[in-house]
Length: 186
Image 1 (cartoon, rainbow, N blue to C red):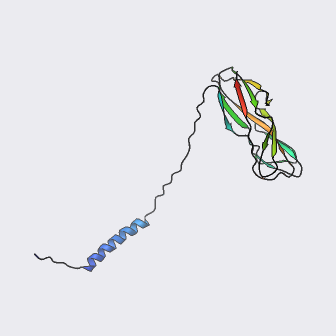
Image 2 (cartoon, helix red, strand yellow):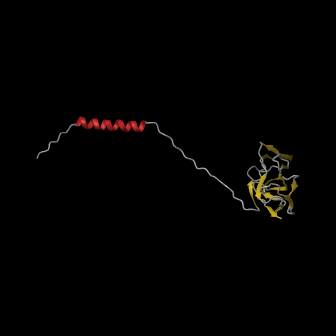
Image 3 (cartoon, one colour):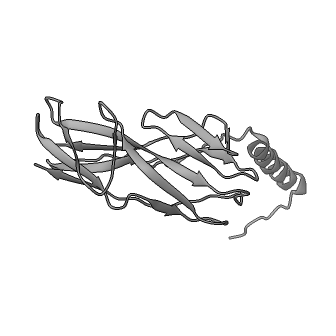
């Protein structure tokens, strides 16, 4: 049996041209953009007679001068200054804590230390005179101060402010330190 082979270059070229057109259409079609972004979800489940930090104490942005001064951040979030310190922007936020106890339970609150040091690129700065935002406000110290839980559900929260001593010509940069709050449920 014989087979016949015909070589038809125009037919082959038409096929190549058709493939090229399909590929060109595929490469010039508008790209569909798809983007994903991760997000986090958080939850805090409290056990009875516990508490946690909601946010840190932030004195906000300050501008030093050749004269030392202080920045006081009250528990209500208001800021004031003394000496050569200038307050920049609307920044500043008291520390905030929240917890769970029982209605009418008394709680003793105290500090680990009456003063802490904030370290950074320059001379360290001292934070002192910690104040709890209760009614009325009270200065916190290593000696316990007492408050009563007034929520029927037993939940509570409280802000804490303090005074920061800023040195003359304090070096610019971020300064940080830690303080400890202790609660004893009575």
